[in-house]
Image (tube, rainbow, N blue to C red; front, side, top):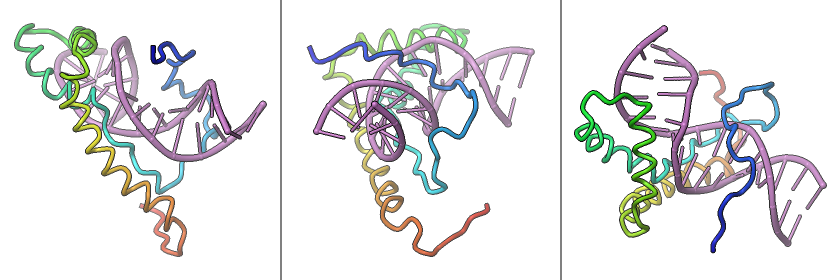
Length: 108
DNA sequence: TGCCTGATTGTTGCG
DNA sequence: CGCAACAATCAGGCA
């Protein structure tokens, strides 16, 4: 029992107003999720099993299979996610570290 | 000090 | 060209 069901965790892209969490200009884009890598591999497989399938189905199918996998199967994907996360750590480090040391840049 | 929420990532296919 | 479910993930902000 680890923990399931967190809370109203959905509305993620509900652009309502803007200006809540201030996104820094150096905010590193989080590493990809295990799902991303999983999709990268299954996407081709799912499509092969469902020729002519559109994203709507693929997306759901992907999620279904994803959960069907065990930590063991997700391992390789999680490993990739962890690897990417590591990459993100570097960006995050530079983001928290330097940040405003004078560099500036802005624009572009 | 701890929970929670928002933001981000990538897939495909279409309007 | 961006969004639509799908899941994960994390970092910061507020109580």
